[in-house]
Length: 588
Image 1: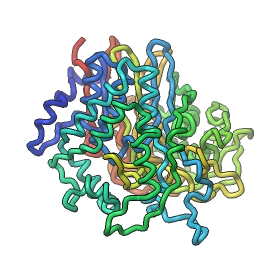
Image 2: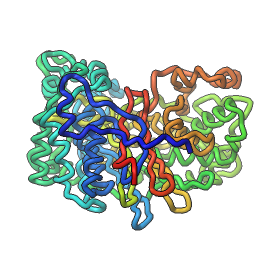
Image 3: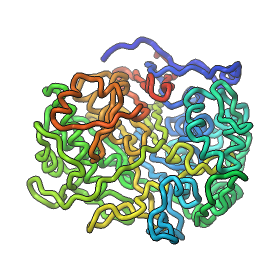
Image 4: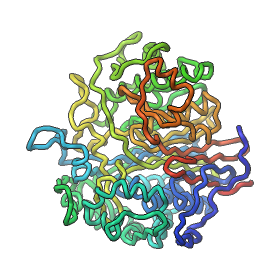
């Protein structure tokens, strides 16, 4: 392990950060190393909120809620009260990994034809569906925070929401990432009066260096702190959410027609967080724990690793190692698309994570030639290299989330991915926060030919996700906690970080910063410019691999647990202008 020195990370406290209003946001530091706990998240204010909770003796769960709530203020287009997520927790006392499914839920009045236009009988245009009440799932974010604090917290939910309330009230300096995201989504926000007022002051997108104050969100947090989560799940906040879904608040000059959703207050009252057994595969002696369905993340990462466990990547040259990773991901995504959905509605084959199934898929990798997508799904009940008929390739638009990691002085760990789906969600805001468009994660029409589609809408169903919050143990002891945002590319981002660290000998900061690709059973593999600039690209193209250049894939965050209680916290040095890592103390 490379020694990075005694780097504390952020040194800006919430009080001091308020003085940064001269026009420059607090700086981000992507790597920190030390003791007593650590946080890596997308913004300095959210990381500092978590560090402050840890310094007061809070657990990783307490700090995670403070981080997530503050991200709802400082990274509002990626997550917040209007969304949901998946919470993976390592309990140092029990040495057990537990997961909470806080995914959004389809309203009870919706059905399989949720996104079918009744006038034409055809699926609606994707962007039309996004900017409508139809896309909004019943949010699970606040319920997840409440459950996490109830199980593992030392402080109250009200205490853990206070840092976010203060940041929303006083404001924060808009950084270049948020300014760019605002400009990219200005047309969407302009369609809704509440969002235009907040994010397009004077009709113009937020500028880097300006100060964003959100008194409505501060009041929302204040109300929840006083009244509890019932204010959201059935009270006045919930009523405002339902009204916005049923009657989208269009601007006078909106370029869209309001399409109402069917959410009712009873849907909010009935929402429940679900504890699920984590996925688990053993890869090179490491136990990789992830999120089970309704997310496809843990299963698909696990399937890919099971395929790759049949090869020794560390002994291959770069071209062959990358070729095998691409091909393994291609095969695993075929299985994901065919078999994985909400387990309350779909029987997900347990064999998907068996070593034998991984071996049956590995035998289809040709080291001399790339496969042609869409490849056929495997047969979990078959023998040899059995497959079932292929379906149409699914092209999933890359969506946005945020991911962060937390560890505390007690040895507890959180890996948490949360989201409102697209950047800016549905575009509809209420109470200072944006509502998700999570239901567009469903397939709008069947995609699996004669086979059942596991990801069609249904009343009460949770849409399939790719979120992959991950915790890695070895001999029962924590080694890594990692994850990333990025929609369908999340799976391949987490996969590559694990391979870079475990197989290819990179340090965690190197594994996160390394160039990325994303193969999702599509004809071309998405790849960053730096990935395509590697010497191995010509060799990959000679094997039949073809690429589609994209600017960036994922925004990862990770922790590595070193000897003697030291923690290495690592985020992105460049992607989305970097992320913010910090530790409680650089010294024992």
